[in-house]
Amino acid sequence: MKAIVCVKQVPDTSGVVAVKADGTMDRAAMATITNHDDLAAVEAALELKDKTGCEVIVVSMGPPPAEGMLRELIAMGADRGVLISAREFGGSDTYATSQIIAAAVNKIGVDKEDVVFCGRQAIDGDTAQVGPQIAEKLGLPQVTYAADIDKDGDKLTIKRLLEDGHMMLSVETPCLVTTVKELNNPRYMNVGLIQECFDKPLDIFDYEALKDEPLIDPDTIGLEGSPTNVYKSFSPPAKGACQMLEGSDRGTVDELTGILADKHLI
Image (cartoon, rainbow, N blue to C red):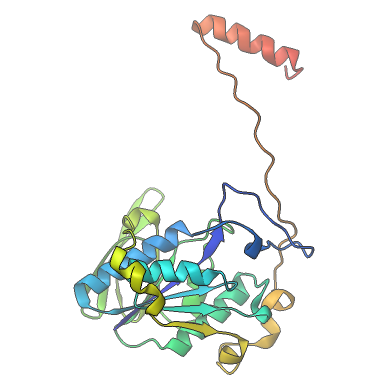
């Protein structure tokens, strides 16, 4: 049995966005972190490993520096890492990205009791599309926004988080589950595993490794093959300093009114 976890290295939102000439983000030039919802997916897979002894494989599509993130996840307890990296994949939108990742997961292999985990969405795009698109391309049943997961044999019982409550669902494996950060508290890296993480296998899937997969269409991957494109990437302008008003309710209202009038806002 395997738990395959799709993770993404995303820009650290506290930093400055680096943009290439074509308008796409220069991820190699920016400080990065592991996407928060994806860490919840990793922890869900590791908890499944604690219960069943399954193999945990972390998969990420990105530039070569993403290897460091995968090593960190191996130090948390994952058994194996797969980095999908090639110039042909650069600039892919969600449709193209899910196609490439689905091809990689298909190459790894999905068996009867396997579970594919994804985070709900990435903080850089906030589309929540890639996980469901991977499930569609692999022909797997899917449950999104999982806030609690219980596995019994080849069946998962999942508490699905909704805006105004929750929904209880049962799904048979193999399946794909997207997780929300409320699902768990990701564990820290283990000191012993930190020492061993560079001895664990890390596979590199480039274009040559995936081009013969039936899910790969060379005309619909990468920047040129993506049906949608990012018009512009930029860092939002810094917010101005906050001014705090103190005193009685009436006094602060009068003071605020005066400030707004001076700025010609009222």
